[in-house]
Structures are given as C-alpha cells and as structure tokens.
Length: 328
Image 1 (cartoon, rainbow, N blue to C red):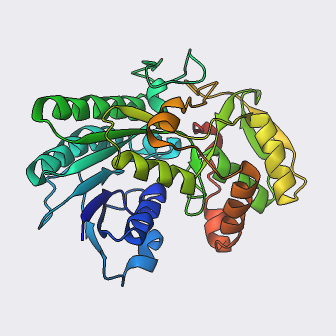
Image 2 (cartoon, helix red, strand yellow; image 1 turned 90 degrees about the vertical axis):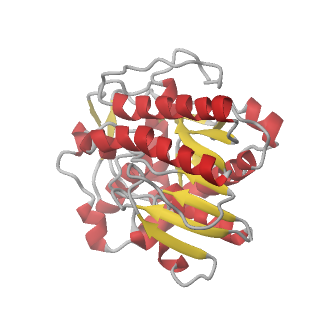
C-alpha cells in the first residue's frame, strides 16, 4: 500500500484530499497544527484503518516513520482573514515549512506536490492568467505575506528539483469552494452565504465590477490528483475559467438563498485583485482535466452544507471588523 503525507490535512482542501487518497487505496498520514484547520473535518476518518494523524507544526523539523511515496504540502493559512491575523506564521509555513518538507521528500525519495496559488499573479495585468505570466505583486502590501510566501515556495521547490533531482509538482490553485469551508474565513462565498443566513445585507468591497472564477472542490481535487501522477514538474493552473463579477455573484447568492437582502458597498481594500481568471489550456493538454461541476449546482451543495451548521457557529462568524478584511 502506497503511503502519502498530507500537510494541512484538517483544512478545507486538505481534508478532501485525505478522503480522495483513502478512496484510491492509499495509506494516508494527515498532519496539521490546527492554527486554521478544524478537527471536525477529519472526525469521519478517526477510526479508518488506512488513516493516521500527526499533530505538528511543519515549520519545525518534520519526521515520519517508515517509507513515504508521496507528500502533498497544503499547510498554510489560505484566506485573507487568516494571513492578516497571522502574517509571520504565513511566511514561515511557506518558507521554513516548505524547506522542511522538501528535505523530508529528499530523504524518503518521495514525490512532493506543493500547493501554490493564483495569488502569485497578484493584481494581474494579463488576463486570463497563464502559467508563464510572472505576476504583479506588491511585496510589502498586506497581501504580500501570502503572495511572497507562495512565490518563494515555488522557487525553492524548483531549486530542489533542479539541484537534487527531486520529483516535484506545483499546483496553482484558483478560488475553490464547497463543503467544509469556514464561514468566518473572509472569502467571498462563505461571507455572502453567512450574511444571507444571518439575514444581513451582502457586503461588496469596491463597485462590484471586480471578477472571480470559482471551482468546486471535487473538480479541484481531481486536478490535483492528476497533476501528482503526471510527469510535469512546472506550475499548473487548476481552477474554473468561468468568470463572474462580484456584483453579479451577489445577486446569484440572493436568488439561491431566497432572501431579500440588499447589496451594500464599501471601499475596496488595498491590493485587492480586480480580475482573477485561470487559463487552463495547460491542464487540459497535459492532464486532460477541466472542471465538470456547474456553479449553480455547486453553490447549492455548498449552501446546503452551511445550513447544517449550528446557529452558534453561524453567528460566531459575524466579525465586527469584517469590513476591514480583504476578500479573496
């Protein structure tokens, strides 16, 4: 049985990856320090014979007993509300954490896939974004701690690939959504859905003309899985190229939830990207991948999940200073 280590296993994407690899017959070792992850995301795996969990901060030396065939490095704060609260930890997990895991991969002769992000493109001047675009990033802006951590992560990964001959894969993840997202993570989907469930008006930062594209989690996991087992070592965009403005998206949420909230507007935060859309030509070519889930169906699944959350969790997520946070 092949063994895979998944860091950030208690996070939104990490927990879904644990499910997928167990389904595929792997022995999964999950690792998380719960700085942003949620133990509840892994409760259903606690008694599974092919799952084990290590509570650990990957910015400290990482040791795993026995053989390892694959490592997926998904440990990192991934939402604006997180990396504004814990900027130093965000930088450390992208640098020190990645270094530790690359060292582990080298020692175990394991293939490693690291989770990069569309944020490496910053506020892009090229649209849609292709993998050969170098980006437009403010290194000292509030988003810089995340953007630069991920850009460094890509650089050190390629250095290990070139210098040590390590088998590496890099996925650039665009906005992903689905069950197990945190209502209070500051991203636009849980923000809008949480406001709708609480009977609040929906908050848009800026005039709402900025665009995003949303990929359902099952599609994202499928793309990551295919990339891991491909022969391609360079970054690959995985996301849904169907673009929508934030204003139109807010109206979709109001229609989906059957609520009568108004849309209110607040100033656009610093460095908030005005456009975000992946060019997935490379993923189509080398992975034969493209998203399958339509937005209307995926959003209904996600909203139905949020409706199952207890009321105290719903109202706990209503941050008093929410308007000061950057949305992704």
